[in-house]
Length: 201
Image (cartoon, rainbow, N blue to C red; front, top):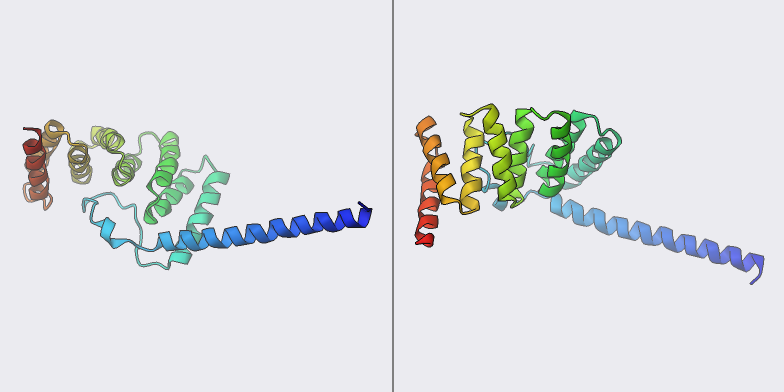
């Protein structure tokens, strides 16, 4: 193969790589933007008093995706920046990428282990991500700092019921009823508890 032919072959391969990369990037961007669209059906799973983590649900999906990319880049480039980790986590949560949100929250927790809001947000993200044991652990850590926090106690009830822990759920529900007897979630929690108990008989 002559030198010119070798040069053309290399250029052809490079062009192929560039076109392939651009095509794959366009597909991934489109899929991520579709995932970023608000999915209101799943938003009802969160107890209403949770610490704010989701931001504005009416934003443009492409804009949200761009914000997430920028926040992720900043969080990666500045691993010691607590606020950067928190912002990335909030945006990941907003597009319902709960496991990714948890990763950033864990970094934020290492930077500020006693931050109550991060502890609560770790409970929320794990609950929505289906990690009920971890959600319980983080909610209990938050309650150790603020034992009567209604939002965290509400979330703990939801986590315990989701994992089928009738005894733990009953204790948490009784505590919630004592602190806030008019809590709008109490009936739902008690009904779910009755179902779990009936299923274990």
